[in-house]
Image (cartoon, rainbow, N blue to C red; front, top):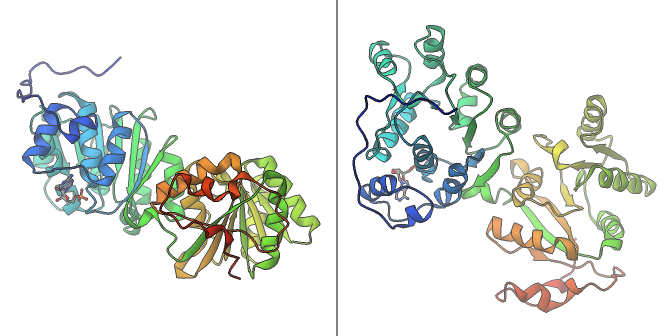
Length: 419
Ligand code: AMP
């Protein structure tokens, strides 16, 4: 059963029918009208990506900084989903009073042609107005964690009806030591909810917080986060399936590496690659979800300490790993989700050391490879290893490679490995 709506609130004002880029994104006339009044001509990239996802009820991780238009990216679709005035259903946590005020104002501006109500709660001021607003009934609370907890303790508000939770500027909240407060607050929200998490950076603590608060999130990245690997040189290596392992072995032989992270799509695949590498005299550890916690810890500790030169892992096990000094990442399998590529590659080249990223591309995975290029917004160089006894693949055909992007140089396949 949905929430009950108080009957004693005025209906929202009538607005003209709109046909703008914002309505085309799925937003209502009331919201498109408000946005027009604010002179937004076009959605920003994060708005373009996030608005349909939030409208569809998805959990989202937005890696974006202030200044990208991220407030509207979450506020507009949230207001639309709230629809009309009712009980408290949306909580937004902000690290500072200034940000909380700013976001509250944005909600007011965007919600001007709705009858939704918003209030802001932060410390360092009296409780009077905040209590009055809560008593009067609001749909959206924008709050800093400390004062919100005070209100929860005093029972001036309850989060039982919250079905949209936004954790904004999470990296700053963590820097400010708010993690325990944030966790306590999340625990008071119903499990059945939509959660949006915004952060400019995704260090391991945030990845594990995200794993805890979000359900099947979609990652939306803008700005620098979309291409985190500026210190990494990446390349695609086309190869037929049956030669993948030989190519990996040869790549490792010819590469001066200290520590290599090899990603596989499946647990079985990871075990198999690890076993093969062992027979070729590499010291190897494996991490995936079927290994026990102690095995995983041992693998990771051994890899970090340099006892193993190669760590073979699945995405699941590798999420949130903070491994300094990984010199190379090999995608033995192309990740299905382009954002996983960025995560995987982000494991190397940390702290501005350069690292290399190799991705083996077979005919079956060429589509996924193309979506990675689209996702990161640039073409990745395709390379062939010199003197490797390649079995022919249609992928080697210039026209196959160039088909979807005629602008790229035709001879890129013939460049040798630099090292
Ligand atoms: P934010 O990143 O949410 O802090 O937004 C940064 C600034 O960009 C704010 O002043 C917004 O009002 C403004 N802004 C957000 N979206 C748009 C848009 N689509 N067009 C023009 N300005 C925008």
